[in-house]
Structure formats: structure tokens, C-alpha cells
Length: 102
Image 1 (cartoon, rainbow, N blue to C red):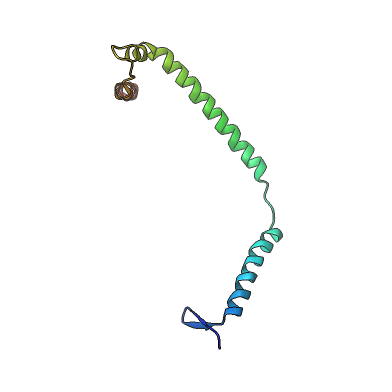
Image 2: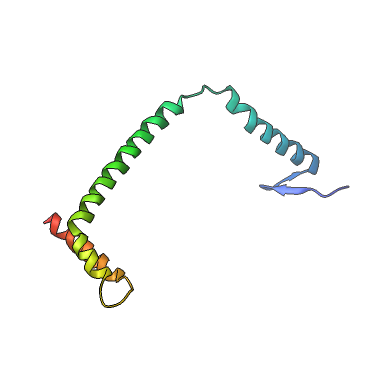
């Protein structure tokens, strides 16, 4: 009669495939409604507060680094050309981090 699909070696008729698809979509929507709900809002607030504190600490450390290394940055920016030497800035930063580790 009509076209059949072969799925995993088994012949499946189109209307059965359509009903299985609709049933799986309905189950995917209905099942989570019956599952117990967690309280992700409290967990999210905790992680957000931790992230905010981390960002504030990082910003404070960056501000201290800029204050202590501002003469290096100024010399690179106000050199003979108007361009910023990014490679030199990165190398200076990497060297300063390596010096702090030792």
C-alpha cells in the first residue's frame, strides 16, 4: 500500500511513526511537571554572590596593578608613535607575573 520506514531493521508504518513522535513530545512536556522541584533560585543567588565578590576582588587587584605599573603603560602609550604596542604590553605583563611567582 503505502511507503514503510525501516528503523533498526523493523518495518514501521508512517502513522505509527507519527503517533510515536507525538507521544514522545507529549511525554517530554508532561513528565517534568510531575517531578519534584528543586530550589535553584537560592543556589543561583549563592553562586551569583560569589561571582560578584570574585569580580570585585579582581577589579581591586587590577586597579592596584594599574597604579603600580602605570609608568610602564604610559611609556608604551606615549612613545614616538601614536600606536599602542600591544606585544610589549603583553610581554611586560607576563614578565611581571613570572616575577611575582618566583
